[in-house]
Length: 209
Image (cartoon, rainbow, N blue to C red; front, side):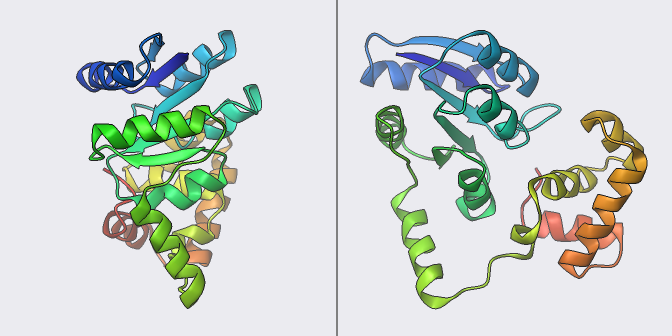
């Protein structure tokens, strides 16, 4: 089995390798320290699974999900995050991830998730599965940021991280006018009025580090 681990922390990558090796003795690994390296590794090589950190320098793991799925539509991707499941799991699964785990998950759960995903399944924790089922039964409204498109969500996170409209435009390859349009849509969909309110909302919802 070939596993690509994309995470900017060397110690965490090593820990993942040790945990996965316990369950899959013949596994081989590749490593990526950034989203750009992850995309390039997937472009150049075949992997049985990618374990992808959400928070990395530059583009996040969530930002490159579409790129990875375009390159390898059937590639299983397990997202890892320090953020609570309710913040990102729904969006990650909708975007094509095969599973979502927080970095606080125990090693045995990681082994179970990898085994299930490599076999063609999808994985969420029992806690998240119960929460999703409860939301469906009770008709609970999704958080406001769930109304945003993937690109709008990306722009919201970048605004909240302190980037200017021009910096965002340069980083994701769009015009300043287009990014400004996304910002206007985000304000309209969230019912907020200013950039300061957007930043406050993003931090309260734990959408940024």
